[in-house]
Amino acid sequence: MKHLVITMLMAGSCLNLPAAETTVVENNAEESASVQKTDIAKEIAKAVKISGYLQTGWNYSTAGEGSSSFQAKRLRLIADAALTSKLAFRLQLEAFNGIAGSTNGNGQKNIQVMDAFATYTFSPAFKVRAGQYYLPLGYENYDNSPSILETVDFSNICYRMVCRNPHEYNIVDYGRDLGIMITGDLFRSSEGFNYLRYDLSLTNGSLPSKDDPNKSKDVAAAITVRPVKYFSLKASYGWGEGTKTYKDMNRLILGAWYNNPNGFLARAEYGLLKGEKKTFDERGAYAITGYHFQTNCGEFLPVVRYDMYRDKVLDATSNNYDRILAGLTYQPFSNFKIQLNYQHGFYTDKAAKAIGKDGYDQVQLMGMFKF
Image (cartoon, rainbow, N blue to C red):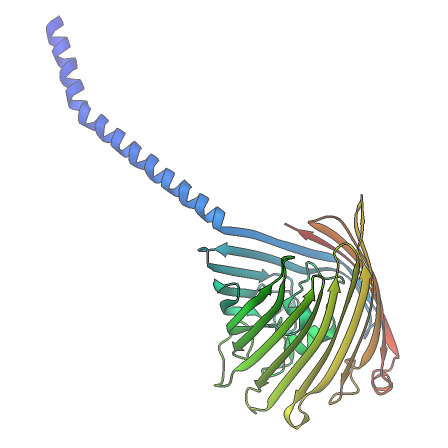
């Protein structure tokens, strides 16, 4: 009997052996797949950098009927990916744009694609960019961003001349378009900056995230010269044609910028927008100055800005004004700042008569939270 029991146990062990071996093989395969997935996830994490920011606060204005509102002014989500040592990709989404034509039926702000482009760097002197990107017109649209801007809002050089597409219809297009661009930095200095940068862009001349409805294309070109470390001069020019009329529209922006991160700041730009047969005839300018005070409690940046705008075609509208801004930015650490801006606008005589008031006042208190 004892020998029979032992024989049965041994037989059972032999019968179960293949199943045990299969289990071990399956477990090893699962562990190997898990390791591979972890390695891939690590590689992706190394290649992709996720960042973004939220700008929120309070806005008070006496323009029009007047308003007082808490605002979620901007919410950006940015993904930058280094696909190879030479190929990079950027995706930027905007959740709180509030631009006319981009809200839903209830007037709520929709998510918009701001940037979706790839850049291949053959060398620092020659890079090719394709997709939806920001146009190289002026300093504010191309060399600046809301996350580092000295004031809450850009000037109308940026908003009306660059971030507005009159070809399709008269709304803001974020200064973005679909196309291809070559860009490069030349003549590296011993201090680590480049003396010259060029940008040449060919785009649809339509609205972002939309196919071109005609055969015409827009051209934008810019040259930036930096003779010394903190100072640069920039000239940019844009040419395009309207959607149905095929009338020329030209944009010229000239500027100068000095910015010492531990000292003095000054920037000025002049812009001109002209359309064939005076379909558009606008000009604007701004000058901003300030000083970066570095303290143990963070950075303080007081600024004063003057800007003006004239629309010679629609000369009795609120786009004809002179405006003075006084502001203070306090940045206690790199990923947070708070901005207080006060500005007063003076309408031109003809605009004031049509609007029924001489000007307006605006107060903005905004916090910027970065991650």
